[in-house]
Length: 147
Image (tube, rainbow, N blue to C red):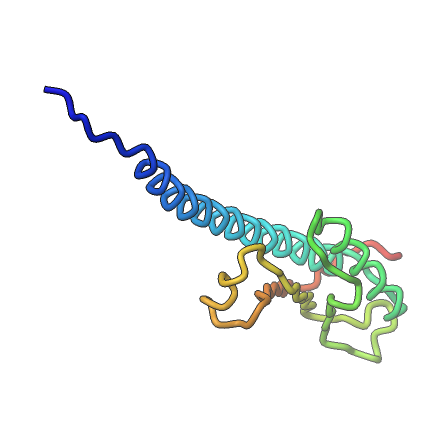
């Protein structure tokens, strides 16, 4: 027996409700993927900057800061990172003129990530932006090259 009642509008309403929810979930996953990529790329760039700092010896502190920041920026592909977002710390020994950084060097950076979905950062509890932080500490090598 055939059902004579035909409701074409019901399937359209159901489709519109489900597709909006599906697209919202897809956008949240895309945003989470972008945030994870930025975090991973930032950690890799900071690690390479710390490695650059440990294998190179700089007698000039401003040259050391500049070279390390250039290295981090070169490895931070598509991450919105500025040079003044990068911090370089080392234990300084003013008596050692060859290399003022004697034991350890720490490179750190912070990036503000703006998700496309407006409520993603609010769910985490950080306002409208997510703060992505990375830090790497490495021991100085005694056999570094002089620059």
